[in-house]
Length: 349
Image 1 (cartoon, rainbow, N blue to C red):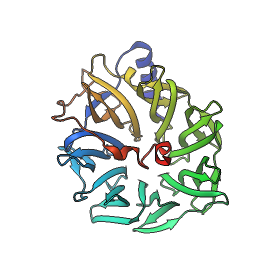
Image 2: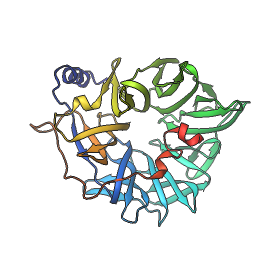
Image 3: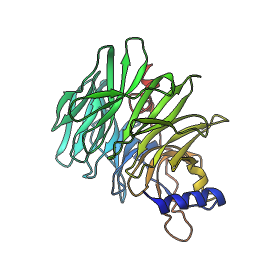
Image 4: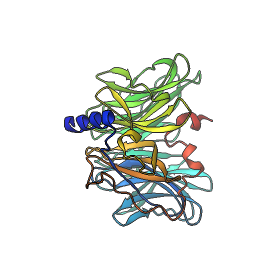
């Protein structure tokens, strides 16, 4: 556990002292960008609008974002492992193809598929109407139970445990955990009808979001089969990333309807914006990935422009912030953010 890091967080929250650096990841010559996943080296996978106006999958590099090959098609990067292999989805003539970008080239997993996560063994998790894993490009469907018509996988750990959700014939969704031996289990909800599991760490701790009896959705974590409501910053909340220290990131609506990224650790949900220097120019809106070092990626407003960010803990340098030059053009994610990526309620529609 990052005990020292948590003490710094508490101190920063109490005193208003910044404890994170934050930097724009830049773009690919078009509009906004979003970081979806981060590996142990701090390399980020995500999507940015390129100069042609298409959303394009990227991986970050020391000299800026590197667009991943997808021709003239739209593409999205959703996962990255410690070897730098990226997975995501490419759209060709409107058809989705789960895609793997590695040092040896590009592999597609078939029409109608989505690749959402990859572990350090190269095992990919995704969905094509049925949740699946893929090894060396070979897709294997995951188990379902009677009454589940559709399923998808969104996270996988190094042991091969997979998380996602499934839709029942009555239209409700339930978070699912698939074990490496082929078994599956439902995680339940927070009193409402639906739940979705979005991430899992190497200790088997699961995060996601679930509906309450009043219809709102709250972020949750599951540790030792116990589901915990992580609370909110005022409105509904959604958890997407968790590292092996149990630090959780996501975003929550505020009481005024704005979105702010959060960090949850040690029983507290913290607005990440409270951990930045005053007048930094940033409003971090969504967080999707966190690595073992506590680096966080997502999307936020930098001086009013939407861009992918990288937050680093502990702060580096005497000013506790490393702002990059304002992006030359506004970075836009594009319509594909509403697709199967992360927000399943939009997927259903």
